[in-house]
Length: 305
Length: 323
Image 1 (cartoon, rainbow over the protein chains, first blue to last red):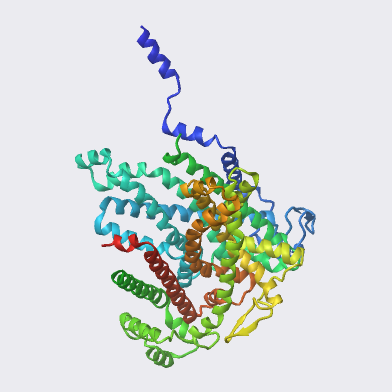
Image 2: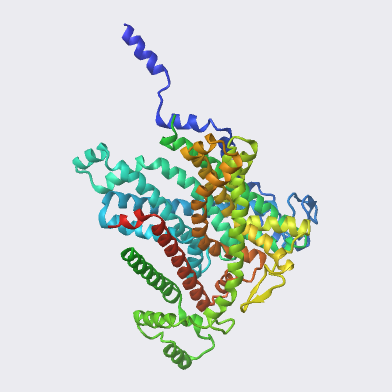
C-alpha cells in the first residue's frame, strides 16, 4: 500500500529530463533571456518584413527620388508615409530597407553557420573516430587554416570566385568549418572511449550510424555554444565583406551594404543612412552573443555546481 | 636545437609552396586568365599569339612551374591598372600599413595593460565590470562599424580629428612616415585606435587572467609578508611575470593586424596595401592580388616561425616533445 502511494507521488512530480534542466538553468540569467527576446524580435522583423514594412524598398514604382536623403521623422512628398528613420539617396525608407536587409544578413549568417557546422562537425567526428592518418590529415588542414585570420581567407576566396551571395556563403563556410571540426574532435575523442560506443561497435552497427546516432548527440553541447557564437561571427563577417564591396550584390543589400551606401553621406552630416543599419547590426550581434555567452556557462560541465 | 630548427624550417617552406599552389590554382585555374589578360577587341590570331606569349597553352603544371620560377626571382607580374610591377606596387604601400599596425599594437598595450591590471587587482569593483563588459564589446563589434562611429563622432560631430588619408609625411630612409609630423599623428590616431580595438580587449583579458593567477602565487605572498609596498609587489613581482604571455600573444597577433588593416584602411582611406588589395579585387587586377596574397602568406609564416623558435629557446620542452 505505502509503496504504491510513493510511486504515485513520484510520477506526479515533474520528471527532470536533461532538456528541462537546461531550460530552467538558461532562464536563470535575465541578461540571456533579454538577449533571446531581442533576437526573437529581430528575427520576426526580418521574417515578416514583406507584410509589416511601410514600403517595399525594391519596388521602384513606390520610390520617389524627390524623397531622397530626408531626415528621420519627415513625411514623404505625397504625405502617405512618415520616414521614421529617414531615407537614403534613392528615397527609400530606411526602416523598410533595414527590415529587408536583416532578412539577407540573417539568412546568410545563419545559413552559412549551419553549413559550416555540418561540414566541420562531420569532419571532426570522422577525425576523432578514425584516428591515425585521417585524423592527422584533417587536423593539419584545420591548424593551417586557423593560423590565417578569417578576413584574409575570405578575401582570398572572394578574389578567386567573384562576388555573389553563394560565394559569400562559401567563403564563410571555409572560414568557419575549422572551429567546429576542432571543437567536435576534442569532445568526440573523450566520448569514443566510453562504453556505449564499445557496445554499439559490438552490435556491429554501421560506422555511419555509430557516428551520427551515438557519438554526435553526445558531442552536441559544445557544438551548440560554438554554433551560436559563429552565427554572430558569420553575420559580422558578411557585413564586413559587403561593406568592402566584396559581398552581396547591390540588388540584394544586406545591412553591411546599406551601411556602405550611407558612408559617403556621413561626412556631410547625413548620419542616418549609415547609422541606423549599423545599430540594427550591432543589436543583432550583441543579442546573439549574450545568449551564446550564457549557453556556454550552462552547457559547460566543468562549471556545474 | 638544430634538428628542431631544420624541421621547422622545412615545414615553413612546405607551407609556402602549398599556399603558392593554392593561390595559383585559385587565380589562374578557376577564373579564365585569357578573358582577363587579353583585350576583348583582339581578333582570333592576336588572341592565339597572346596566349602563346603568356604561356597559357602549356599544361597547367608547366604553367605553375613557370609562375613559381618567376615568383622566386621576385617577378609576380605587372599590374594591369598601374602598369607597374605588382611586387613593387605592394612594397611601396607596405610602410603605411606597417606604420598603422605598429601604432595599433603599441596602442593596444598602452591602453590594455593598465585596464587589465586594474580589472585583475580589483575584480569585484564596478570599474572592472565596466572594463570587462567593454572588452566583450571589443571582441564582438565589427571593426568597420566602430570605425564609422569614430568618424561620425570625432570627425563629423566634434571635428577634432581628420577622417581620411595620412596627412603630412616625412621621408626617412626612402619611405614616407606619418608619425613624425603633428598633422600625421592626428591622421594616425583614429585608424590606429580602430585597428587596436580587438587587441585592446585581448590584452585586457590576458592581463586580468595573468594578474589573478599570479596574485595567488607563493612568491607574491612572500613579498607581501616581507612588508614590501603594494606598489612594488604589483609592478615588480606581478607585472614582470604577466608580461611574457601578453607580449607573445601581441606578437603573434601582428600578422592578423596587418590582415585586418584591409578594413581599417578602406574606411579611413589610408593608402596602405590593404586598400590596394580591395581596389585590385574590385577591378580584378590579378597580378596585384597574387602578389599581395603571396607576400602576406610569407609574412604570416615568418611570424609563426619566429614565435615558435623563440618559444623553443625559452622552453626546452617544446622542442623535445616531438622526439
